[in-house]
Length: 432
Image (cartoon, rainbow, N blue to C red; front, side, top):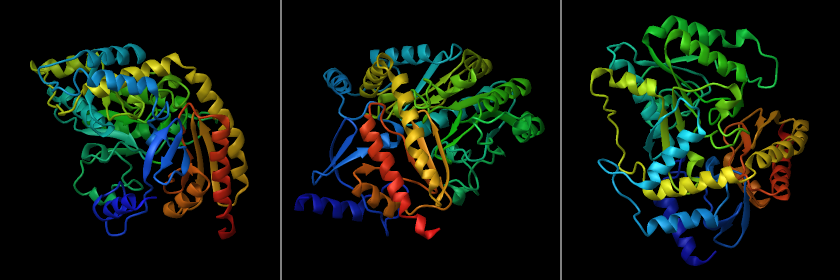
C-alpha cells in the first residue's frame, strides 16, 4: 500500500464513523481500490472473494458492463430531478416492472432511498389507512421476536426489543406488540401450536393493531432464522380474520435470494404492503420501494384527501431507477434460479463439515444463504483477519458466520469461501 493511501486510512480512522463501531476504538477497515465480478481488490493489490454481496445487494457481482452502461446512458440525460410535481421514464418503467413481477394485488409504488425508509413508509401507510377511517385507536403493530426492520426510529421500534441492536432506545421508541419468534423448523413437520402465541396476541389486541409486519420465510439480521411456510400462511389468514393489514419486508430476501423471486411466493400469499430494496439496483445505488394494494389506497383516501405525507429528496432518483431497470432485466434474463439452486446444493454439501466442530451449534442453508451458527459470539475483528488471510471477504455478526454470495459466483470460488469458514472455525474448537 502506498504512503498516500496509508495517510487516507489514518484520516478514516480518526474522522469517519463506520457502521456499528466506536470512534474511540474503531475496528480495522480494509481499503478497497476496485471490484469486478465477485472479487474485491484492495489498495495493495490483494484480492478477496466476496461472500457478502455487499450486505446482500450485489446479485450480479461488481462492475457489470450492462449495469455500468445503464448509469452512463442515464447520466447523459439527467442524474437527478425532484419527484414532487415531476416524473420521468426510468421511474415509470421501474414501477411497471415491480407491479408486473410482484403479486397481482400490488398496484401502487412509492419510491424511497433506502430499505429503512421503505419500512417507515409502510408503517405510515398502515397507520394512515386506519386514521382516515376514524379508527385512530389502531396505532400498534404486531410483529415477532428475532426480527430486524432497519435502524430508523419506526423500524427500530419493531426490531427485537431484547436481543436486537436497539435496546438502549427502548424508552423513547413507539411501543408495539411482540409475539414469539417463529419456530425455526422450516423443513420439519408443521404444528398448529407454532402460531398459538401470535394468534393470542392478535386476538387480544386487534382493535388497537394497524398492521402486522414480518420478514417472510427468513428472519435476516435478527438471527438468519428460516421458518415454515405454513406459519406465514397462518399469519395471512389471521390478518384477514381480525381485519389488520399485512406488511411483508422483502428488503433482504427479494429478487431471488431464497430460491423464488420473492420469499412470500413460497407460502402462496399476498401482502397488503410490500417493502423491497437492497438488491433492487443490483447493489449499484441506494433505492427502495414500498408497494401497496388498491385496498390500502382506497382506505387512505376515505378522509377525502388521501395525501401520503412523505417525500424523500432523492426518491425515484433517475440514475438509481435506470440501473434498477437494468438489474431486473439482467436477473430475469439470466438462469438465476439454476444458479441459486446450485449455490444452495453446494453450500449444503460443503458446510456439512462444520457440524463436526464443537464450536458449531447449527448449520442451515436456504437458497443462496448459508449460515453457521456458533454456541458463542465470534470476535469479529479476529475472524475478519482470518478470513482475509484465506482470501475471502466475510463479516460475521454475533454467533453467526454466514455467506450470501453474488449469484454469479463460480463453484471453485464458493469452495474457497466454505473451506475458509471451516478452517477459521476449526481454530476456535480448542476453546470448547
